[in-house]
Image 1 (cartoon, one colour):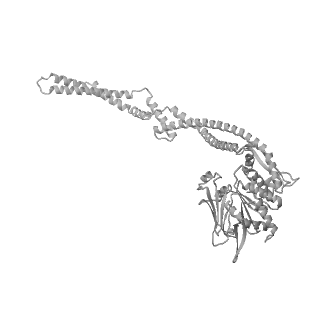
Image 2 (tube, helix red, strand yellow):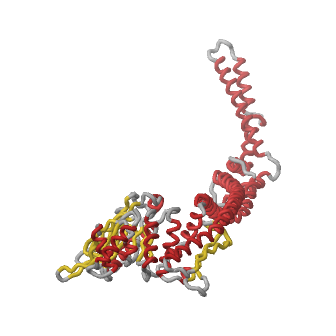
Length: 554
């Protein structure tokens, strides 16, 4: 709801602050006084482009500020998504400088015009001559039938599931693309992994093979060393072990009284045992090189195979090879898991889609039932609004695919005159006809759905008498549930307002400015009488004005 509008240095307005009723506010004034300036100011708050012609005094900045009560609009998520500070009493501000540059603010946060338009479209709905915004609003067309059919709750439940379904479809599309790429990679991974598995490599094997190869390559030297050991320790007539034995025997034959012979014999025994052990160890070196024929060639080939795999995968160590093997196995397992997950997601989507289709059928049936009573009610209103020959039809047709509103498309068809075929209303209705059609429809749904502030610009153009009175009555009814602002030339309409604003021009020195003031009861009687007759008004006009104000609902 628009609580107030503060305009400074805009077109012919020096400065004015306007407070609006939460019900019906009418704006009247002489032709050319500047009523359209208010619409221009509101349009700037809606995100309309600004230019230097809007600045009244070039020495000062132009500013338009609107204060809105958002407590019934549930816009917290919008503010959060756009990173704007939320306040139930929100201030929207436009600034225009003399160089043509402008800025927009919401609660002090600077925003671009796109964000401003998104927000303002939910707050103000302006119906000007030739304005088709309302009639092109696809969402509102569905809301009309659904609210009157009493199925807004069912539609809301459907839309939550539809949103989830669309999100799952997007997720499935991403996962299918990822899976497609993974499956392309899978064959290559399996080929590489199979090559590694065929290698049958075991941890530590390369180091062991390199050590074995080094031994095999030194076989001749090792055998020479062993042969020399045989000669030195056993085979020759003067081998070390025989000499130690002989020395030990000689020491044993010495007289017992010689000091230290026992210790020498003991040390020789120890040396003999150590030499025997040393000889056995050296002899065992021969076992290291006495392998099956071709062992060296096999070891060389095995090492070459391992290095070929390392080189092929740009690896340096056996640790890298084992890590690559584990990584490939993990990736392949992940591909299999992804395939399974994709199938599960497809099942969930299919189940949800069946549920959506079932609910969409129920919703569609109710819309079709509601279409005819709604058409009838709208046509009754149109008759009272001086469009008694107009034809109106709501066409509910099936859509090929599910959409956010079910499985329907809705068209409003209209013909103002007999003999003229029905056609989409946005193509055939004039500005005045569209405004009256908008009023007729919105009056029907005023109690069913929350509407933004509705602004009508001369909806009563070219009508008078009972038709104008009926327009005023409908505006008053609509205003009892929603905020309505109406620029009017009709005293019947103006008399229905909860608040009556008067726009006039005032000459000051060498300039003329537009000013706006709220009319009290006496001033309203005078203004309505002037609208019906002349200025000053006749006594009969004053009496008529009092009568009109007396008809206003309490």
